[in-house]
Length: 280
Image (tube, rainbow, N blue to C red; front, top):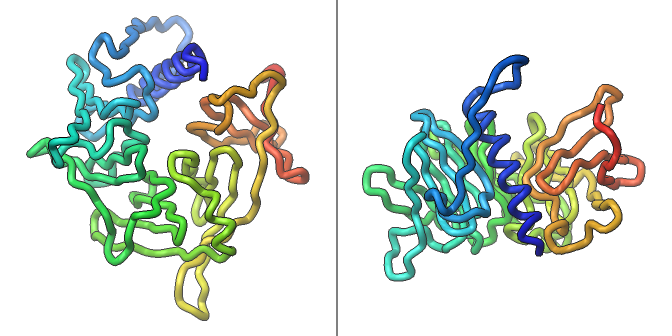
């Protein structure tokens, strides 16, 4: 894997998210002071996977080595200590989510979910939500609807942190199809009510519906789409799409903007093709 690629994409991502979190938008004549931060300044690791902000203005960064908090002046990093069960349960953090109650959720690269206790500055491992075991976690995110969404190989969970209620959507496909969903390879991208994507080495479109006869939720795979790369982009870094967001251009084409490239969707071929032209 090319370190230069990693550094470029991570710091581009860090800059873009920092601009978004601070509410800054480009305005003609407006000047900015850009300060670059890295592990030498206090961030846990230069490989920053995700950045979120809480209601107090703290910025939280999931990194290859621990969780980092930034208050605008100082950095505090939380690392894994094998001898201390109250620390992060693994050294590398896949993602961090701030929920509607301002709680900090962390998931690590070994597929373990934990909740941060701000008062005690300790991490509590969450092995189940309600009666649902999380031992086959694939991906985890928070939605603008206030829910936490967890993709498991046996089901999909919608969790309400305010009430503690969990709702299950059972996969309506053969479990051999779900077996290819491996943790840390896929990210959830919510795309409106009852619709989301799993982006990774492939891009999977998922719809949610209610089975009125059985009185339960169902998760259906609507399409399985491959990734078509530009020539020469074949090393390990380009093996997955990465952190993603969907949008549409003026002609209605579905575009996937990710940390490893920009892709345009061909629904007939079921292919996301990496875009190498000019962006108008």
